[in-house]
Length: 227
Image (cartoon, rainbow, N blue to C red; front, side, top):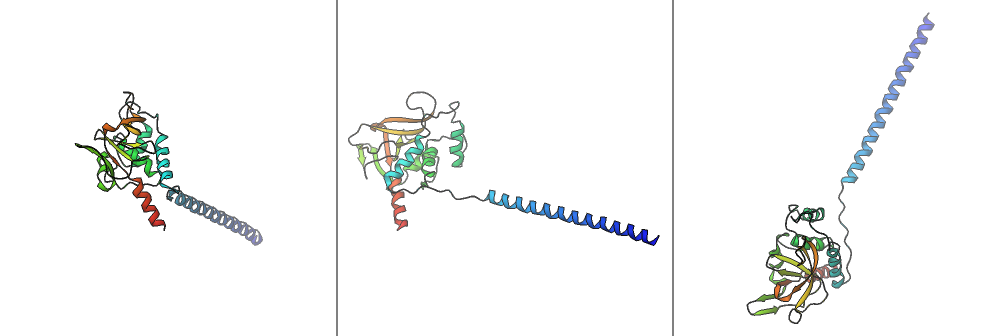
């Protein structure tokens, strides 16, 4: 009788021990999974700094900014209310309301995605791009045209109608000699009265109030910091 009882006690002990081992393995497995998931979540949440291209010349940088803007040519607003997924994305990038006017916002955006963060006070305000006298290379006043600095070039900022900014879409432009200039603009109808969007425009020199050069100072600063 004692032998039978000891046998049952032995079996009961084995059962308990097996249960404890199984429980322990389950806890360890769940802990490992949680740790692994936590590690993946941490890696997924880590923000990597954007990688910008290296430009060997100012002309190359100007072309890159223009090429970024040109990818939007032909895109239009959904209902002519500054609306559309691409417009909302640009304004969101600049921390502006999704239906905000975007001529200045988009001008800033195509620079920023190439690593050029324009030091303007208000990204969405046209006047911000013409507020620094040191960057103004041309202005029109009561006495006519006045070129102050170097001749305007590709993607210099053009002030039109006092509340609109576009970028020059050609390499050379002399407002003292040329009566028109090719521009790329956002939040415009392209002079056709169609839907607002991004268009190539041919602007009359007489319509231009000011031109600002932001790229030369930026590229010069890059050169000085890389020495």
